[in-house]
Amino acid sequence: MTELFQYEFMRRALVAAVLIGLVTPTIGTFLVQRRLALLGDGIGHVALTGVALGLLTSTSPVLTAAIVSVLGAVLIELVRVRTRTNADVALALLFYGGIAGGVLLIGLTPGANNATLTSFLFGSVSTVSEQDVWVVSALALGVLTVVAAHGRELFVLCQDEEVARAHGLPVRFLSVLLAVTAALTVVLAMRIVGVLMVSALMIVPVAAAQQLSKSFRVTMALAVLIGLVSSLGGLSTAFYTDLAPGATIVLLALASFGLAVVVGMFAKRRPRHPLGGGTPKEEEVGTMLQSDRGRVTR
Figure 1 (cartoon, rainbow, N blue to C red):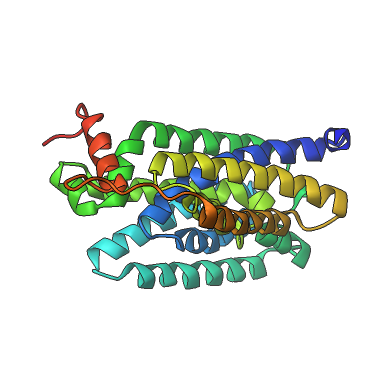
Figure 2 (figure 1 turned 45 degrees about the vertical axis):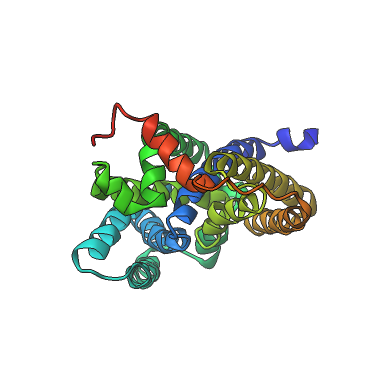
């Protein structure tokens, strides 16, 4: 195990893996709750355009990917709301535009090769630089700050948009905020997992946690735990077996989902609430709104 810390590139990768395992399931819990599980995939394709732009301009690909992904997330939310376009159609536009822009700019980049593109598509431990670690740390801090400051409102929004609107929450702002934080999450994870697989680490740990809990808070906590184990375990396994780190991390997360399904099948079900009581999620919405009176206007 000590061999992992003997190499500087592995120390950088481990720091990034911890941040990835912590942040991706946190945002993924909100996305799953709002039925936007494919949003990460769409933003990942847009991030590819940002990566290509960074390579073309000889600047930081992670930084340009963050800027382009945020712009793409805001744009897709505006398209979804203002043009009455269905969410799946809006995501499809994001898919096609992002991948087309990325391929076009990569073709215009002098000296770009398949190895460079592959490292961003599927992740590469050896290419994580110190600058990448600082950028990823800043993005992770920003995402966690947003969740700490607006987690209650985002929960209510993801549970029921009409309830959020009825309680005076800024639904449009919160929708854009969620899309932007998802975009930043995709970017911070792409150096290890790759833009094509980062969405899996946002969704699979949450799906696994849902097999074990019906509570939003507990689901998020379990998802973060599974994400951390998958990131660190997958990275360590890839180091010792010379496997692709992104694929190993995702497969470990999928194995966790399979285990959670088995455990969930044998776990004792919660007793039903007595007549007149709400469902766990309804009661949790009430608790969130009650504990957030200072920021929710009625």
